[in-house]
Image (cartoon, rainbow, N blue to C red):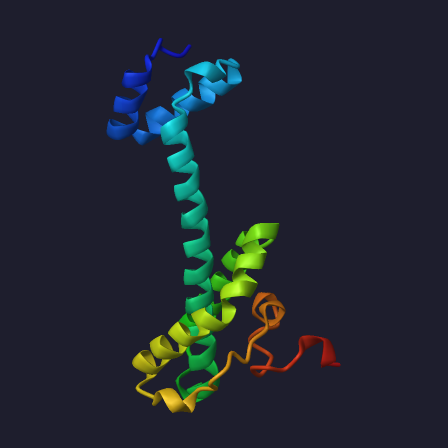
Length: 161
């Protein structure tokens, strides 16, 4: 049973123990005590979660593309570690963007994140920035494909026989 929290007590709880605050918010909702919710912090928390999800998509895209660039442009250095990173990032990204708004986010930021991925790949490989294509050679569908390691950048997986 939820403790009787006043608005100031919920505010203090938000500041001191976010998990306990979340549990209190969930319980208030379950009890349909909507008037007791800490709306100001709830709005802040939800907005932070949305930003966190968007950052996660961007981070996974960047890591995936950087490793694919390394895989493609430094093939003699390929390792099981690179393969595992590519697979993990693809799997996690596919799970995250399976939902509408984050898939749209991934598509929207793909070109910008590619620029960061090139910088990262160049730093990790020692290759010059000009080694890599100026424009993103990957489509989102290609990046999400389990066959991504079998394709060359820019190659459309639907054209493979």
